[in-house]
Length: 277
Image (cartoon, rainbow, N blue to C red; front, side, top):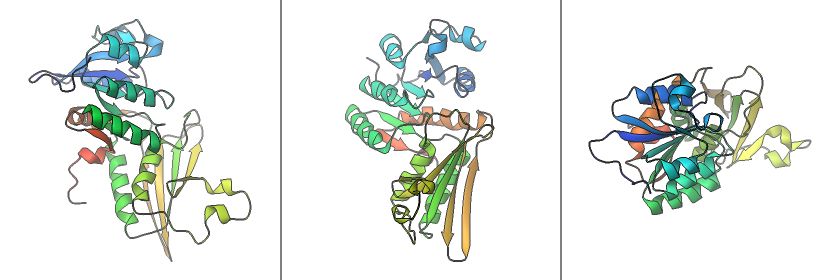
């Protein structure tokens, strides 16, 4: 069984699940370049049995495992970083918690109800789970939106992604709706369910917020929250661009901080110094 805390004065041992993915590749390269981090395990079904070096054309002889469950049974690591898929993330996180491993979750698809259960399990096991969109600008956009919702009581979210993103609503939009629920629900002159016509045109209701998911070719991930009040509007928007680089810095920070946490924490801002907000 993996220890809950890493050995003192030793690099933090990391497993990257989704090592051959769009974020996994540059993240792995970044981990290999950091002296205080050690890539000790990796997961990718399409590269299982090969080394990380063979799969990513780098110098690393760590064997790629076909699943997180197998990595947990064969390798030793302190932090699991999950950049897999919406269909696999929940079970990956749950398995890591059960084995006493801290988790950084960049994958979406985990519901609020599932996070509640994971929080209970992680708290009982004494490990930390940090989930979110790890782009610093995305975290700031969510903080700014929460601040605005204290003063403007009507809002809706639009989120964007490429047309082969399998999950909707995105994890980022769910996280933002969860934050706003503490200040909401959003106020409407006519409730979405009371409209005449096809109520589906008003999007999905997520914890009291209407969320609209666009999935189109050529679209990159982004989200915006539109606030409205009499005679004025406020829009807060985040666009990630087409490269994974924005997520790397925040993920590395999350890896270093998650071992100090217990239970589930939502959002990169939970470990950022944002006292002025």
